[in-house]
Length: 72
Image 1 (cartoon, rainbow, N blue to C red):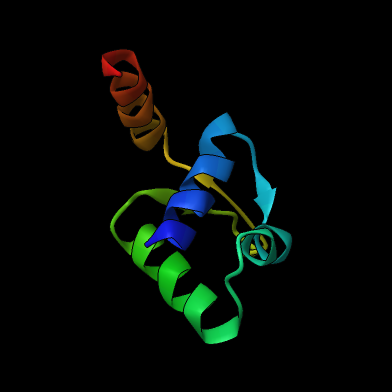
Image 2 (cartoon, rainbow, N blue to C red):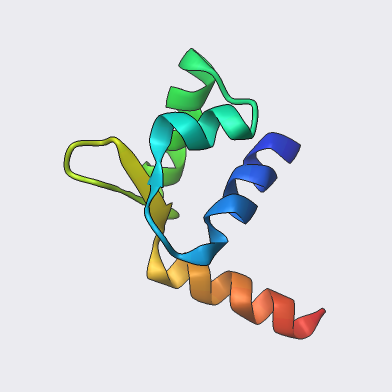
């Protein structure tokens, strides 16, 4: 789960990130990366670019993380 947490932390700037580079930075490779990205996209946590080469957090996910940080 730490790997997914690291991915979400990296995406919290709200910017588009290269999918391949981002998943490699957090230690996700091939099948595991596809599974995690597919899950996060399917349930609306992230947004994939049309060419599926970039990802970013959905606006609602960013707001959720901001509210959590305010509580801490």
